[in-house]
Image 1 (cartoon, rainbow, N blue to C red):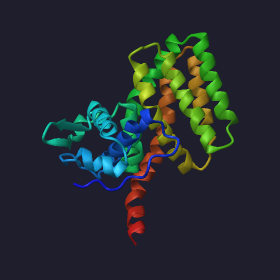
Image 2 (image 1 turned 60 degrees about the horizontal axis):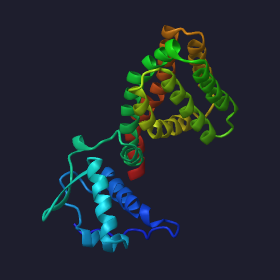
Image 3 (image 1 turned 30 degrees about the horizontal axis):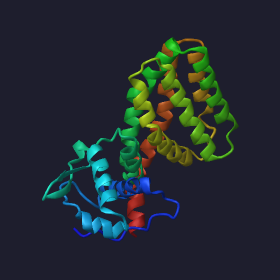
Length: 252
């Protein structure tokens, strides 16, 4: 498969970041299905021509994509896209590409499932283990949500709120997972908040979570998160039901 001509690198891109830009372009095209699993990718010379970069930059990009599980490269054979099961979706770069490329309905359903598994117990742990400093971080994120005047400001504060709870849970193994899914949470919150049309509508639900953690009531925190997730679940269900209708309208 011949590589299509890629956009020229921005004038401000430094030499050391060229391979990352190349890897991002190729990785995004794998995630969006342009290069399907099993596809043999263009060779080094074709990538060099497409991106206007050196073989060194291409080789470093290929190494980066191999480390993320997206491709397998063999001497004299070339680089082939790995099966989806091999992709490291918990890599921050891969997850960001996935969020941008995934079918919105598919992404929302899977992200909602992850939240339902993770967040109620994380909040319960935070109610048990949080420190005063961690409580202050949760308070600050909630205050930023309350004061938000734009969807972007609300989403940023919403992500910080949930990240602060995860950090307060006191389980070191949860922390890397939470940091990784930060971009996925941001993508989901942007979508669900825009569907609701009122960026502050879930503020009371977040406040119930905050108060349960403040008063060290793990079961109340768990239940408050589940109640909040039911609200998000209704948005996801609505999107799922209306997706086929929107697809038909787009084709028409």
